[in-house]
Amino acid sequence: MKNKRLWWLLFWFVAIFLVVWALSAVPLSETVALLLKLRPADLLIWLLMNLVVVVTMTGRWWYVLEGMGYKLPLAKLTTYRLAAYGVSYFTPGPQFGGEPFLVFPVQQRHDVPTTTAIAAVSVEKALELLVNFLFLATGLLISLLGQGEKGALTYGLIPLVIGLISVPVTFLWLFWRGQQPISRLLRWLQGRISRLRLGKTLARIEEVEDGITAFCRHAPRAMRLALLGSFINWSLMLLEYWFLYYILGTPLTPLMLATAYTAARLAFLVPTPGALGALEASQVAATSLMGLDPALGFSTALLIRLRDILIGVVGLLYARQLGKNDDRERRSLF
Image (cartoon, rainbow, N blue to C red; front, side):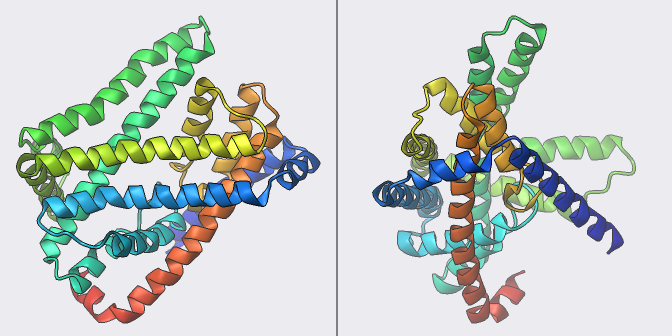
């Protein structure tokens, strides 16, 4: 209990430190002036773009379930996605925590077997992580190459970034071939490290890999469509992010877009709730690096923060309603 409290204090210390740093680098008067220039019509278009992003994000999950033999209403799945997002957003760490709200509603309300529901979420999350990592590594590589520096640091990082890109591609290829790389590696380590006892953890990882492998081997069409949906979703997120800078009066070049958006996405890996502080600091740092007004980055971060909090609160309220309606079933499942 004491350690948990210390971790929470550390998370909040980091968040407050980053927020204070971002505020110290930005004149608030300039931030307010930028935000006051926004037109209601532009904000409405931006919010509608975000709605499309949420629906396309849910589409990946929809294709996975369809590949497993269950065609559920996309609108319903989108509401479950919002509930899961609300829980994950306010949970410290890289956007995990809401997965149960992707499992028990489809199991209880749509008669999807428990094992299938869990496997579908596992596959969907694996595909999400693979594509996210691929795009982040690509964005980092583009940012490094675009700096034009001749120093050893930049060129020394290029092989590392290329290696990071190859990791999700290799894992996806191995799953497609019916192999289980993660559990195989863990079993190998367990045989050589006497103190390493994974037990149920290894069994759960094997179950996840079984679901991924079965889906990849027996539902190639759904797999391709889910991956295509992921790439479309990322493209729309990039467009939505570019549009946000556009309505603030500074359209980004492709290099600027890659640099700023990669920084924003990496900020969500910082273990503070909703990347508090990390998002603001990342955008201030990115705009400063690109020679832009740091107030522009801070304004962008504020708009993203308000949007995410709004969606997160709506999701939490719906998650609470789901919990009230299905509390007995959820306890029996988890």
